[in-house]
Image 1: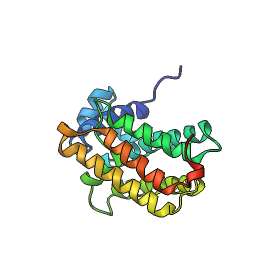
Image 2: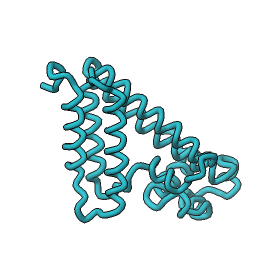
Image 3: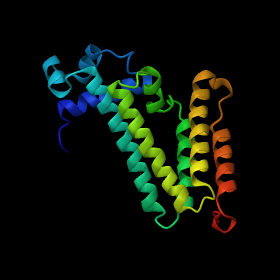
Image 4: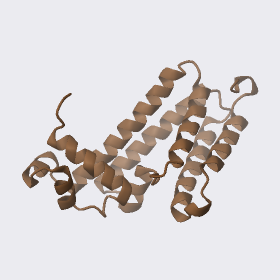
Length: 194
């Protein structure tokens, strides 16, 4: 097994901390200490914390892209099944004890300046992801794929924010059921899951 590089170790530690506590809440000194690297190694890997924040968002995006690719491989001839499975997977994530929402929406709240590098990166990532969902909706025969994608996005974004506001009555199954209703409404009857 290949030894983890200083850069990879920094990014792994930062990713865990950023997701659980927030990017702005975690200082560079803490990341350096927990990753066990020298300050010089940190700055050789990441010139600024903003660079690290962008790398964090890129690494989270890579995980999301890998998941979508696995769905394509699992159901190569059924975009509808890919959409249904995506909804199922998101619902499962929402139910995890350490769920702290969407890393991209979290970053959007922390970096509202549209010119900040993290904000620019997260918008690019979000556009790319939702364009993939739109592509699945089109391939799956959705009657109005743009509308379906916009509705799924609003539902997801709203539900993620709901999870922050009040976890006492947060139930991921509500998200799944609402998303499935949207899919059922949009997908042609002869194209429903069997």
